[in-house]
Image (cartoon, rainbow, N blue to C red):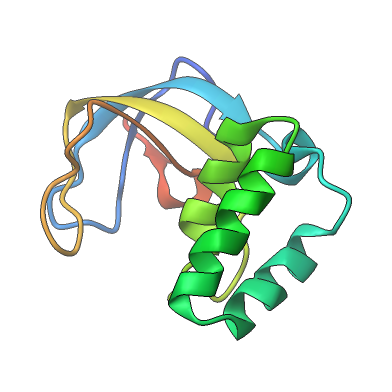
Length: 123
């Protein structure tokens, strides 16, 4: 599958309603952008062992310690979930013209960050 670059039209090819959006920004390794001393894998292991309330507090602490809080939020939003089995590091920011469906409802925001591997170029 060709790489997604800034300026490409993309869709979420695995969704029922794929949507159409434009890639605004791309981060190749979000773990480096966070600038944290503990490795991201260690952070995720610690989070998996915590109960939901402690996980929320630990997450806030990690975001506060990060050199780029937005990058830390993006990383933890996707990788800090129980359903995420394989950590994702490549993220893109997409401006949606036609919003894709998600498992519960439609994407609500016009601009969202999502893992690069979830997207495919529109031809």
